[in-house]
Image 1: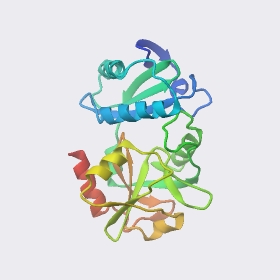
Image 2 (image 1 turned 180 degrees about the vertical axis):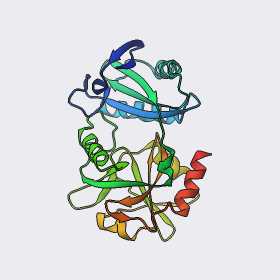
Image 3 (image 1 turned 30 degrees about the vertical axis):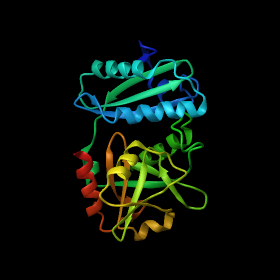
Length: 254
């Protein structure tokens, strides 16, 4: 059972009731945000709330509580869990704000490099973090079945989109790239693009292009920057995190 705060009141729920993308999700369709804490403090909270409220306004979903109240609810949920590093989720659905958290349980081995698998799938509304998450959740489960960190979504023509739970960057000839459109505007992605000492250029990537890339990494709010050293059966470069990824990882930690 998961303890969650619903409109400011505690309740107990089965895990699948709170998981966007499942047939057992217990609420009307809406939006969600996921963030982490460090030493019991939410990381990049304002950016997550900015995106939540801006997106809600764009689709006509009126939050049932003002921003300040939701922020207080987030801190209440965080303080209820003894672990200092947590994964916090906010669900914004019609007439309800649901907030719950769990231990982050970050496996630091991922920063030595992870494997990913490609899956043909895409978000129906990639610019919106909606609870209609079925295709991404299925892709992620496929990745888990293959002992991979995440699934990289590709379209029918083999063009790379994003991760099922992440954004993707790649490096070729010391140039850093990411896709411009058709992907979720991730918070960590935004931080990289605004603060990277390396210029980030927009480009598109095909499935077959992975063989000639120098570096690949993913970004998500829970793990930050995750080096990718293997895509399907192909190693990226020499199978180790590259120098640009390594420097960005250090800077992001700071």
